[in-house]
Image 1 (spheres, rainbow, N blue to C red):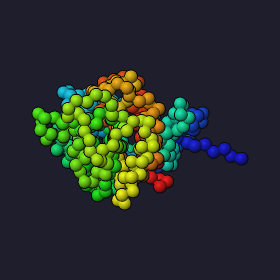
Image 2 (cartoon, rainbow, N blue to C red; image 1 turned 45 degrees about the horizontal axis):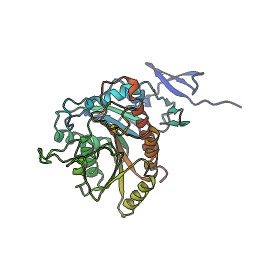
Image 3 (tube, one colour; image 1 turned 135 degrees about the vertical axis):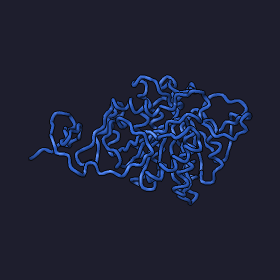
Length: 353
């Protein structure tokens, strides 16, 4: 009986591809087929990265599109390093290369030893690089994001964005509701509630610390569920709203109840997950502008991510924001864990519903 081997493409030459099996014990050489580079015409929205997240060879065809937004003008911290978070996280991810199989249908994935499972087997990731910011205004960036979302066709595919400061979530969500014409449920992982009130600015400027309050005013927002908010709050730093729900990582039953109530309104609702990395315990990831002590364990975060994708159908997009650049590659491991689970769950979400 002939033994078959799953083959993964590990190296490209001028006309040949080197393939190997899962144990790297056998190797094959194959001609590059002319259909290998079947591309959608690229628009001049992005600054291409030298290497894609996790060294993915796919450039334009896949089931999850990813791009960075190097923007920090929505941050209240001067000279914030969150602008280059996407580049830093992409560089760190190159230590975990993922390979396509010979038919471009599946990947080698990433094996999580602690949880005994493969991630990203069915995620065909398209890394466009970073959005080319024309200028640093939120208004202009909003226009660029609208063009990009139309380009990647969110009606047909899913996407992931790496920020940047958290104000980019406002522009992403607003533009997504315009394009899809559907109400949206936002699940936000964050140590802060981002509903702050600044008397000096008269609340006219949208920034990373108040964008949620502006989103709550939008009719197309069905609700915002915040997970992980903690710390002490003074006047203007605490906020109540009928569409705003705040949970701890242990509030699984409450999460189910809120989601069920929102989904039973009769309207179709699209899910969106926004992950501010300062929700993590500072000892696990200190590279943030505004750390908060008493954060969750990494396993609690992963459990909650999996639960959310289990109960919220049609999650269209995720973002991960507010990390600093400048750290050593190993310092981003906890965030890479989060990104891998977000992408893995995003790929599966809705397939069985």
